[in-house]
Length: 150
Image 1 (cartoon, rainbow, N blue to C red):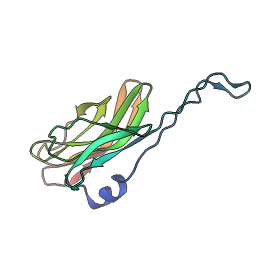
Image 2 (image 1 turned 180 degrees about the vertical axis):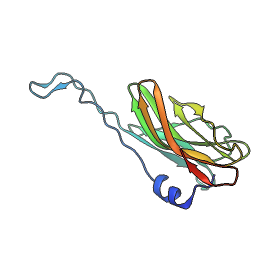
Image 3 (image 1 turned 90 degrees about the horizontal axis):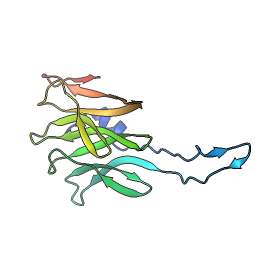
Image 4 (image 1 turned 90 degrees about the vertical axis):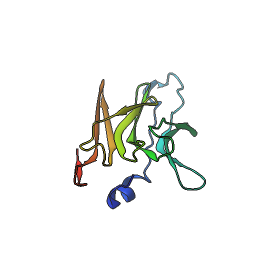
């Protein structure tokens, strides 16, 4: 998948860290429970030959790989949200025709979104979760190859 130059430089090297653990503390009386922080970082794994990119994230330093539509193709997780016990990773999943399909993984299960043109690249760069609603921001290329934000 080929991202527009600006997006490649701006988003692929990024990682998001989330810390939790203050919920059980009362700062007036000191800590009531000791909850260890959970640290998440979204990203990609790159093969030793630098030929393939695999989507995933790290949780407390342990790599969690995500499913791919076409395992021989590149896919990427570029946005990460932790909501309660659920982990959402937004990005793209390259199909067997080598087109980037926009979507996200929820707890490791792929949820594809409808692109403007299924033969062109699309991707998700930002996710927001509010209750049971998931909002995804990114782009989808139209039939002439123009990247349309949405």
